[in-house]
Amino acid sequence: MDATTEYAMAYALTTTAGVRAFLALLVAAVAAHQGWIHLTNSFAWLGSTGSIVVLAIFALLEILGDKIPVVDHVLHLIHFVARPAAAAILVAGLVHTPSNAELVSLMVVGALNAFVVHGSIATVRAASTATTLGAVNPGLSAVEDVVAVGGGVAAIAFPIVAAVIALVFVIALVLVVRRVTTVGRPSYR
Image 1 (cartoon, rainbow, N blue to C red):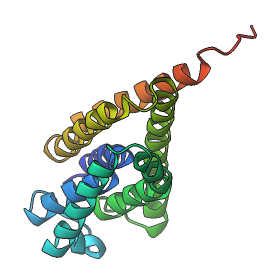
Image 2: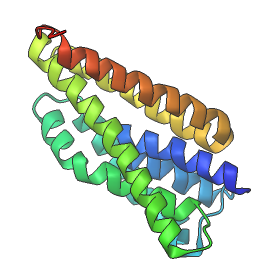
Image 3: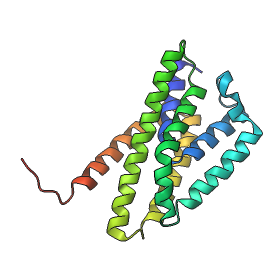
Image 4: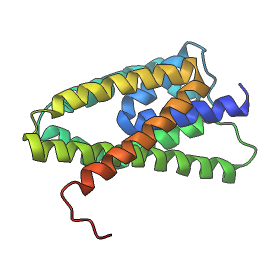
């Protein structure tokens, strides 16, 4: 895999990790296990059967827990750390760099991407809770599940296309958050 493809796949998967941390890791683990992607030597363990089982359990718990009122908000607090960490792991496992300094820089960028995605989703979720008393949250969670699965699969199958879609998704998400957080505020122009 060439560097452009690696970077595109890493970007798309870090965006997915911002939505569902364990699902993004699970997608990469299964892809590595099947030989569809090649992880760096330090992260070859991610493609092991044991890792896949553990990640599948955590992904299922993450998906189910996100549908339960109050539990979803507790998970969002925990995921302010977990999702950027998952993104950093994905970058480290996917991108082959000539130096450790470059790898660490890319891991930070991937973690920040997941942090922005997660923070944006958490903001939208908080607004949903405030306006609908949480009635819409399970539906939003289901949409997030579809985005995470679709984004993860697309990242493996079509990395460059998935990266472009991920970039559009992140920009749209930030614009939605900007709109949600400015509704009702007086304008000082």
